[in-house]
Image (cartoon, rainbow, N blue to C red; front, side):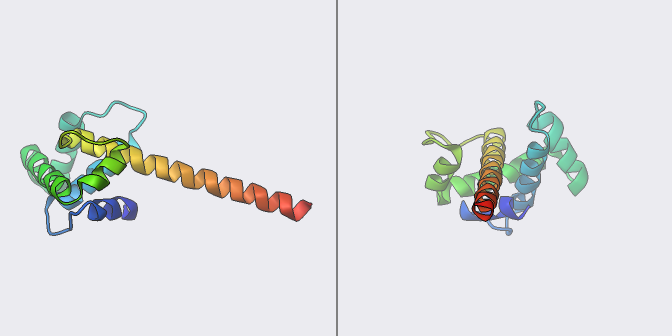
Amino acid sequence: MKTINGIIRKLGATSKYKGYYLVSDAIRLAMNFQDEPMKITKDIYPYLASKYKTTPMNIEHNIRTVINVCWETNKKGMDEIAGYPLNYKPTNSEFVDMVAYYISEEEQMNTQSKTTAQYVDAVCVTS
């Protein structure tokens, strides 16, 4: 969760926005179900609406507000996370997907780096 919140903050949104926690939870949910097709309107919004005792429409609106803030504040950062220059502001589902994928890739690279470092350490110790 800390990584997700850190990325959202780097993009320019803070916890003063209702959608800050909602987008964080949506990204976490998307990461947990990466091997399955996940429909934001049918799977994520209703779950978050139930959790936060509101409506799926409010969830969608609050997430969109955070994306608008990120787009206006740090488009360059959004381009970096997307991996290519964005020509338009991403939709809610595109934003959630691109951040979830970015975090998964970062975690995978960190795991591979640690494994490589452990291997190098082991080789150096036995040599």
